[in-house]
Image 1 (spheres, rainbow, N blue to C red):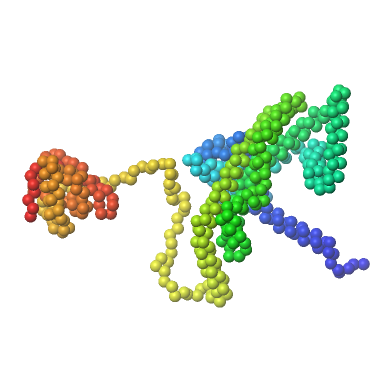
Image 2 (cartoon, rainbow, N blue to C red):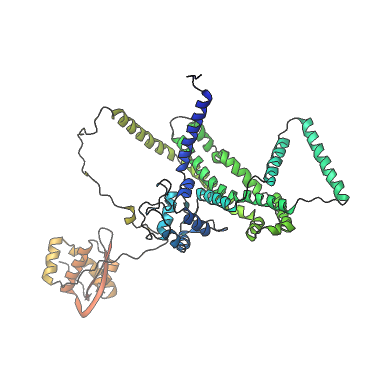
Length: 520
């Protein structure tokens, strides 16, 4: 017998599956998924993994391009569609560009494409003259996932189960509120320790098998290795919290006033966030000198054990530097957190947020008016508005040359004009048509010549700047042709500042004023 009543359990399960599918659709757009699904993923992952080995977490652009260029043939020889799309869905790109032609792209173009796709993260460090790059959290996750497939090492090991049980046991003991239960647990632990002491004193030494010890050590190293990607994610999460706080400050609703009061009072809202509290606890533990010294001694003791010789050379190096490798990335996260906090505090205390809020309200008001009229005003309705510029000429951003602050640049080329001879008639005509102050120039000539006995046009201009620009130079040339002595075959360079503020220079015949010029 069949029934038409809906099966609630089936409906709920169907809704859950649909919701999960939607979630996976969102994840499919993430950089990690797109990188793994790309046609050139094997080449890209292999190159990125070789480009950023252990210890080289960040590289300047020039060195990064050089390292990628050394393996460029792997990308050019890779089979697949010309646009680098995924063979599975034709949508994912291995290099971030859809107009690739096989064998034609340079290492710099691949690097820029990987930045756009989210495989690399670009950092502008004020202490460096060159932009640096590092693998993104998505790339770290992809490499770790591929490495786990390559090693074929199961995660359901006895050592991992013991780690889980030990953490459960420790958390249960530390959070126990019943005093009697806690005392009973401590007594049992004391009895176990006393039993181990008696057995050891009697000469009975029980050790785990070398295989089990190596498994536990590798599990610990795997957990430590996963922290490298977490540091990158910490930085991204802190920036997301900073952006969310700024949005709340600009929002006309919500807890804007409370956030402003807290920031003005000096509260570290970034540090009080979930990601901030988690990182702060980790950073304090990492920088505890007593615990760090004790832990390093434990690591040194483990390296002396016989079973540690089964580890590879790379694993032994990772074990020896398991904590020292964490200090630098942890400090970088702390620097990012500190800079974001200071920037947010300046944003509030300088009242810049008020200007942003006024602009946001104006944009929202304009958007509201436009949305209110969208159903009433046809799209082809003419508006009684005249525009002086009916169209704009667009050009590619690549056509613009960026200024390098470290490059002083080549000096601007001077505009050189062909030399022409000026007769007395031409000079006289220029003086008449340009209303040159000959009386003032005569006074300048007599003043400079009276102190030194003689003066050239250049001497006069050095002591008495050209008040009328080029017109003053022409006036001095006119006076020189009538009242100065020319030195045949000799020239001099005269300079003056034009009325627009620019400096100019010209080569003129050498004239020397030996007597005073009569005032006319």
